[in-house]
Image (cartoon, rainbow, N blue to C red; front, side):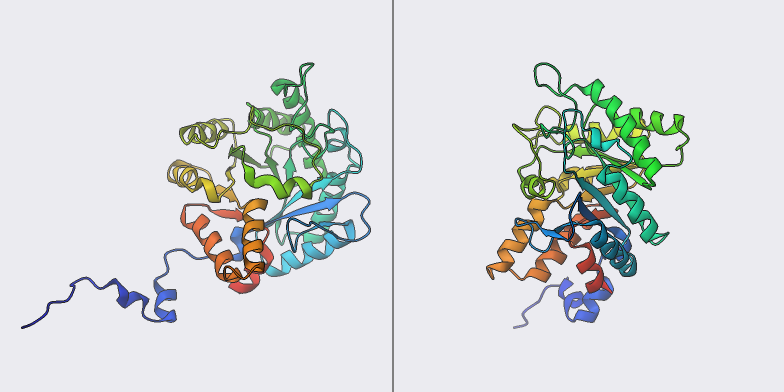
Length: 326
């Protein structure tokens, strides 16, 4: 009696490492990786972030070294966040040419040359004493339109410091149009905008709060998106593209791969995703306990984000990944 086997045998293409590599549908390249960097005002040396093992708040000197390393690794860019010594209600340090983020931008641009894209976070949360992403009204509610005025000034300050891509992460209605108008009016019409278009009110930002020494009280649910909503993410993306965003972002990545895939399927502009601090911390913690294979988990997590449709990924493993890929 002849036993008939299956006629379809997909395993043929999985038989060897060389074959798997040859038929891989998704690949990583260093140019698709962006490294977030924290720069701390007054720091004389890097300051470790306890909830993000291996990540630090940089001094201006150590910033130069890591930018040089990033350029040598061939990654696509860096995203700068400032950690100021002093904060106030309107985030004055964000628009001060001598503020830490603008100082760090000038340093990074000078160090990087044309080897990578120096990007800056355009949001007030690192600079406000209340920790919110905007200006508060008398009732403690984030005033959307007053915040837009601060964003306009912040955008011009960052462009004048040399930022090559402004990352609008505050989730205010109309922020892309407001900053685009300010840039155009100030002679910075060639400066592109990355809109954090679908940014959700996520629990996975926890370690980031330590990284930027956030003073937040309460939460950001009145302006960041509800994690339950998928169609709303598409709406936000469409609005930001209509207002002139050159690139759009989904953040976080891991829990919102459906939103990311939706965006990638329809967006006429590049779509990026941010593998946030909590995603990083979970893998590092599990690996430290020996529960998972660290390298395989890192690679799989970023491959998953790319497979869902991200054209580039902000990840704290950008340098390490670039070395593995090479």
